[in-house]
Structures are given as C-alpha cells and as structure tokens.
Length: 577
Image 1 (cartoon, rainbow, N blue to C red):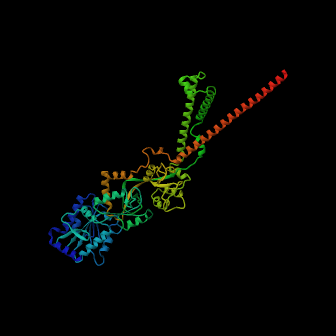
Image 2 (cartoon, rainbow, N blue to C red):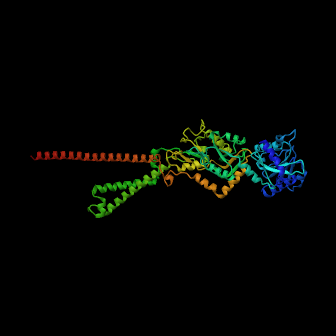
Image 3 (tube, rainbow, N blue to C red):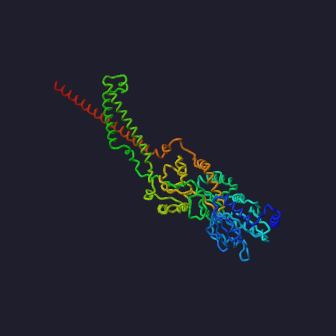
C-alpha cells in the first residue's frame, strides 16, 4: 500500500488543476469558510512561518507559536491554520501534543493543516490522520506545500487512509459528512421502557431506538446497538470516556457533573413515588359511618313508624294492601290507610337501599387509604422506601435535601434489584418513572406488574429532570445528531413516535377505571351483607320465640280459665244439689 501512496503523490505533479499557489490556497479556504459557514468568527494561527498568510487575511486572528497550546480557546467558531514541521527534537506526536494539550472542545473547530513536502510526507500524512482520528477531529484539510515556490500546493482530505484531492473549493460540511459516512455509530442502551428495552423476541426496541435509526439514515451511517444490564451502568461513562462507544442512547437526566457531551431533549423526565395503600381501620365498624346522627335518627323513626303501622294494619285487617288500594276491597281498611302504609314501606325500602349503596361506596373508597400525597407527608410517615442499589445513580441527580431525606427512609438490607420476581412488595414505597405510573393506571388485572389494590401514585412528583443523550469523549456524532434531532422535532416526527411509544394497551373496560371493582374491594360489602343476614335471622328467631311465648301464655291462661270454670260449675252444681 505504501508504494501506491507514493505513486498517488507523484501523479499530483502532473495534474495542474489540483495544485495551486501556497498563499492563494489558504486565502481561498479562509474566505470561503468565513462567508459560507455560520458561526465562524475567529482565525487562529499555530506555528505558521509564512508571514504573508498571517498578515494579509482581514479577519480577527490569534497567533501562537509551537510553544503555546490551544487549551480552552478552541470552539466551534474557530478556523485553525496549523503548520506541522517535525524535527529531530519534536516529531509529529510531540507537535500535536504540544498544540492540543488541555483542549476539550477542539473537535468542534475546523482545521487547515500545512505540511511541507519531503521524503517522509506520506508517512507524515498517515500519522496526522491517526492522531486526528484519536482526537476525533473530522473537519480538516491538508495542504502540502513544496519548498520550491514555483511548484503549486496540493490540497485534499483523508478518507479511509487515502488522500482525496480537492479543486479550488473547500466545503468543510461536505468533508465532515463524507468522512463520517464510513464510521459506524456505536451506541449502548439499558433497560428503560418505553425508551429502550428488550422485546419478547429478544430484540432491542423502544422510542430512542427508533429515533436513532432515523437519525442514522439521515446522517448516512450504520447504527449498532448494544444492550447491557442496568446493574452495569457504572461502566457506561468509562466506555464513553475511552471512546469505545460513541453514544449512550437511553435518555437520562442531564448531568452537568459528567465531562461528556450531552444533547438536551425537549421532553422532561419525571420520577414519581409509588406508595402503598395502608389499611388503618376496623372493617367491623365501618358500616356505621356513611350517615350522620340526624340521618340515623330519621331512619330509626321511619322504620319504627313503618313497623308499628304495619303491625297494627296486619293485626286488624288481614287483606292485601294492593287489593285495598286498587279495588277498595274489605270495608274494614280504607284506601287512605293502605296508601299511607305503602308509602311508608316504600320510603323505608329506599332509605335502606340508599344506605347499602352508601356503605358500598364508603368501604370501597376507604378500603385502603391513599395517604400521604406530598413528599413532606411521606418523609414524616413511617413508610420505608424499597430502593435497590441500582437506584443510587439517580440519587446523585436529586436535590441534596431530597436525597438526604430519601436515604433516611431506605429499607435495609438493600437488594441489587427490586426483588427476584420483579414484582413490588406491598407495604413499601418505590421510585418509578412517569411511564410506569401511567402503566399502573391502565392495568386492572390482579396479575399485573402493579396492583392498584395495594399501590397508588403520589400526587406530588419526586423530581423533574431535563432529558439528555450522552455522547463519547470528543464525539464526532454529537453535533450532527443534534442537527438531525432538531429537524425531527420541527417536522413533528418525534411527537408521533412518542405518542406511539406511550400508547399503552388498555386491558380494562372502556370506562373509568376507578369504577372497576376488585374482588378484595367487595369483601367489606360482603361482610355487611353477612351482618344483615345474621341480624335478620336473630330477629326472626326472637319473633318466633315471642310468638310462641305469647301463644303459650294464652294457652296456659285458657287452660287455667277452663279449669276454673269447671271447678266453679262443679261447686255450683254441688250447692244446688
């Protein structure tokens, strides 16, 4: 391959359209960059020996020699003219190290690299490509100058270890796009439904995956996705810092403490508290609660009146009430009396049915109490937070006061995950995402991940984060990804993808889920019915006993009366005889 490159450079001398005067080449590149690229406003020279180039360009400039590094000066608005002349004391590695020492945003700038033609120019260009690739510098043009001023310069850029020659124009955006096309976008994701997760077919899917696929097509690069366990999250910043991965594709809360490029999304990331419903009352006494004392007095009075009238009416007139009202049968009972009895009985029935409905509603509502509803109430309660070790990374991003309060509420010992079965244990609080809270509100089966009979979502959210994508150190994909992402927001594509990702399968009836009863919610009502049946049996037994006692006393009285009458008769007969 080395001899091919030598032939390539030798052919340049016979292509007059591709070689140009030294000063004219640099001036045209600078003029075009300042007039066509938005944001370019600073021209930086580093160790450029040709004074004509430095002094003739009419733009704001900063001049360095090879003893001064760029440090924090380099930004996206900079165009850098850098001349690299390796010597015996300083080779290519030493020069680049001296220039870029302490730089953080150097990969955003545009570069014009001036080289001097010599016997090792081919190796110098290859080394330059290697070092610039390590620094993730994508937008640069190489200008090879000849010591013989009569010879014209060579201008081009590197693509897959080949020097692609340019004519009179230099378009840094095109160079960046072409060089980026041949580099795969290596991403890493963790489990975070609906943004990125493993499907039942063991494929990585989700909202962020779909967005990345569209952006990769727009950029023209190949997308690779690697899924890792959330417990291994600590290795992700290391992979990004070492440039073994280009992007952490699962959106997370923005973290300014991490020295890695991040793209802020338009959506926010809410974390909520999943609270247990605590049973705090005696079910055996709750059937007395729905009515106030005045209503109880009225109900007792109406029942007493209805019972008394019913007793009097049926004792005196043993006829059918409806027959009396409709046909006027049996002259001993008037229609008015029968109608009053019927109205009182109807009112008693309505009140009793309304009471049963009130008891049912009351017991369903208070089956489990949805309290507390604020963070202050939660911190003051005795409810413990069951947060596995994997949640420690999120505590770092919370406000200090909230984080300290949560750490005091932690349930010990702590597990690496929620539990082995993946279900939430009743009686403890948990931290969940907003998507999970929406999923909970749409699930109604006792076998679902969340059981609404035992949990509820606290009304006050724990914290709201700004969402970000995180990129590798000196990422060459960050700006392009951000540009494509903004276009997707403007066209509404991300809004459509988000709606599709958050559209949860509704396993419930097409009704208000708050009216759907669980079997456990009906148990108190069954208790009430049992109490009513037992009370009815007791009253029925007492009534039978009273009737039997009355009948027995009447028989006993009649028996003694008959004995007395017989005795009186005998005495009278004896006296008469």
